[in-house]
Length: 269
Image 1 (cartoon, rainbow, N blue to C red):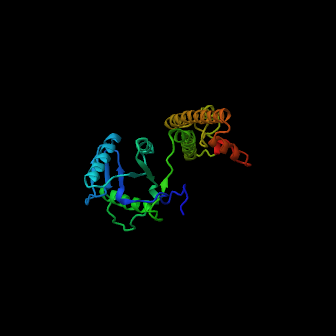
Image 2 (cartoon, rainbow, N blue to C red):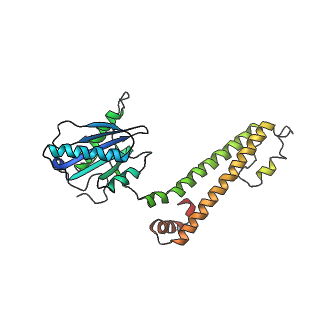
Image 3 (cartoon, helix red, strand yellow):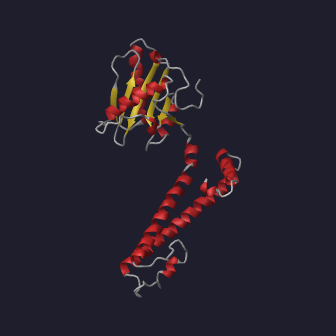
């Protein structure tokens, strides 16, 4: 028996005779919507503008078609792949009575053929097939992503922003070190706060000052490094303050628990 939180298959029995099943292939310029409508022999496929109200109107129109075919729609389910559009559309549709699921992109099995055609139309057909299998409770078709609330999604931003800033900091440090290695200088540490003052008096093994263009480039990189350092510090301080304000809140309680592990700090959690 499937668990309630088992996202590999649907916990609700599917009655396809009274369920409108729809999938959406999202892109920046348009949305391609496909559906399985009870009582309608064709499987409609419609391209619309990236507009949530327009999507809802299209689903209502298909429900009316099923009603004219003497099929009462008691359940509307819709799915789309997780991607750049995030979860706002799922929350918007759920608030309007539509059951929405977000498919984990890497869980969808694709053809291993090297020349597999890839178009929005074929992707929509594939999504429809795996989504119907998931609704039937069959394993191996796809898995769903838990849809977070807006607050839960926003709570992840500081950690992800910090990760991006740390990667950028590492990239700049490596680039500065590489610039010095090209000049024969191997002991310069750009991560030190004293490094901007040191480069003004630094000389190469040839006993000449740094070339002017290289010096200007390194100055700009060290300035970026200083900004990144301050931004990372600000994010960490705000995280500490948030934990102090609400220490028993679920994410914060987990961070405090992980921080008790030797060698693990809150900034790494």
